[in-house]
Image 1 (cartoon, helix red, strand yellow):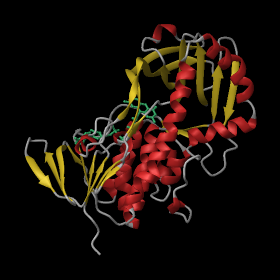
Image 2 (cartoon, helix red, strand yellow):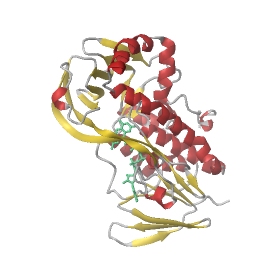
Image 3 (cartoon, protein in one colour):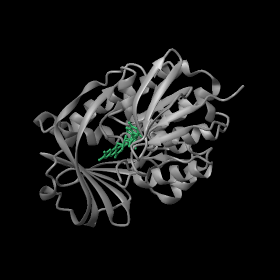
Image 4 (cartoon, rainbow, N blue to C red):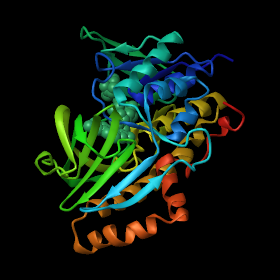
Length: 371
Ligand SMILES: Cc1cc2nc3c(=O)[nH]c(=O)nc-3n(C[C@H](O)[C@H](O)[C@H](O)COP(=O)(O)OP(=O)(O)OC[C@H]3O[C@@H](n4cnc5c(N)ncnc54)[C@H](O)[C@@H]3O)c2cc1C
């Protein structure tokens, strides 16, 4: 039987993962993106063990690991002492670490891999409209010169991010809400004596800071306040800023990831707090599941397979983010005196870590027998 024609809208990390996973299953999707090329910002940094497992059969995990930095520790620091160390060394499986790889590099590696398998990404091509007449889909696409053409793919994968045109076209509300305050993000070079082998979190009310090592002395700082550079913990000094951006946290989720032959994956379907580093990873997992279900001819199970995972994540990270960023007296007390005691217990770490590594989500069935 002929393979269906598939249009992927969006060549971010999620659309590219969909393309790669479809290619290795014998499909020849096309992929468009309104941008002129891959992102240049570092954006999502953390690639978790589940994503590495998913990228292993295509050979991409090896390339990611060669390009990134492995971290196995999270240090929670109070104003005068180290409160807690979370260790990942004891995680089962070959990927007992989080991989730090800036999004511009992960996208470039994904784009290179799909190119090598013979797929040309149509940069500068924007989906302007999508409509359905029964099972016939019409995608209206504007090319870089302003010309407009129509395509009639059998399947459409909407990987077009938080402001998804595909989501709007299929009438899915993006239900949820945004936090009132902006958070802040800086990538730069750091001078510090602190270990850069893990994530350092500084609980310095009224500000919370997280510092990810990227490579050498380069770090990512995130704070729950936009204006944090004048209030850095005394143990760190930023000597050069490479990128700075405020961002707003929202928690939003669609009711359905599918309308007939049209699917939503990644940020087009769900967005949430960066706590735990799951955003991009969850989307890459969606993409891989969808590719598998398409190959199995069982796409009607897509929403049931993936929506509960995002719903559970939002239910977990929303209160956790509010608790960590809260300046209420009682929450500060809990963070400084109770969390270090409870968090140090091995069985508590065993319960916390799966929220970061994604091992608390259904294991991809196709990986049970190697891919
Ligand atoms: C400042 C910042 C920091 C972040 N930090 C983290 C982090 O630390 N950890 C984490 O997990 N996540 C982080 N994220 C979120 C992470 O970047 C996203 O979760 C991830 O990029 C989602 O991937 P995606 O492919 O679903 O969507 P996107 O990366 O948004 O890609 C969507 C693509 O679709 C294209 N597109 C959109 N509309 C159209 C259209 N009509 N036609 C054609 N193409 C279209 C866009 O050009 C884009 O390339 C951060 C995001 C930002 C902005």
